[in-house]
Length: 237
Image (cartoon, rainbow, N blue to C red; front, side, top):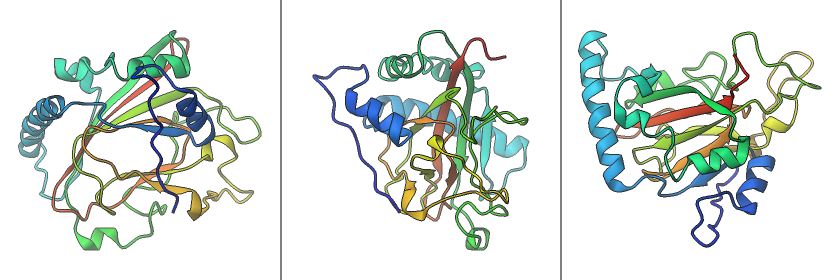
């Protein structure tokens, strides 16, 4: 499994560094540590916990059931205000341009799992969260099997994901730059390119959604709580 690297800042600038751009182009992602302050994390977690408690009642969710909510920017101003977060939107504009729209915003809560739910291989087709890249149901057009650059996301991690199998996202480094399936339609994944994004609360993952990704089982003692915001070009409808 590959290791993580965090680009160094340049004079405290909020705009993209050359190192970040290179990592985004080559690996398909980079990390922004302390993208959220402790106060921002606490405020977000408070709202999320309230929403989650309501939905546990309404949907009869069990203690191990994961929960996702799409279009969270419509739920509460605290989620809407993240669209143009001063530490993140400048990076988005540097990476994809200013003629953009927000395509998706979603909340993800993943409580600790039962061991029986984790017996499948990481990202297996019949596992709880298979390997995939984000795209429409009909798929993006491809060029020699490669998905063109149509979209990017940032993920905001609000809980401690520093331990292995704490529910962290895994990405396949560089998988946005090549065909992702062989002639039999099977995914091509080199284990050496798999990166488990083990990060502290407040870290942001800035990434190409064409990257193959999945989620590790959460075998920790606390729920994983995170948010994802996806941006694409305004002419995509």
